[in-house]
Length: 226
Image (cartoon, helix red, strand yellow):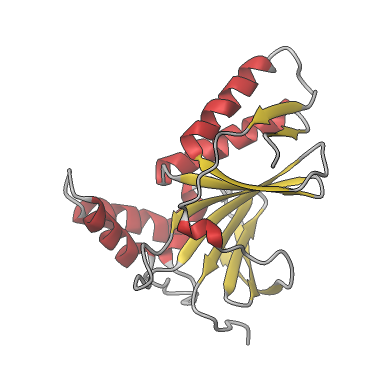
């Protein structure tokens, strides 16, 4: 198991730092790092079931970064610990602009349920596009609803119940996407002005893709393709 990964330059390191910071504001849990073929795939959870009886969808955010190595690895690490390692690498690389930057990995964790499932790498079929305004509106309305429904100091179970109800609710159009997909796209910084997100399907997974990243949604095995 590798103890580090090397990004191609400090610009990529800065992008990773911003992405992790946004992810930590949504969920201070863990992040999954999958390396291979010179690419680092960074998965973060926005919403996932709390147990076998929980019917909420799995909503993940994904950013990819170029690596200098072809080495293969798969690690799940605490997001705050990784942010600390990235910040150390940023400090160490201040005088080496344009050069590759190595980030050491924190200790892995093994109790993250959502990281046990891996979205498909291939087989994606283009089916639709969604205007950014639709996703932004769903996120804005959901954030307001969650804030109003969750009193200050509420327990974790109540917070999860409210978030599941709000973010698991389907959009008006397209109704095969949960509101949580809009929340993920907005909170992770994937939307641009007047940009549409392309929608793809592969098996039980639906993917929203923009120039800035991907949102992956896993629901029950069904097809939205016509």
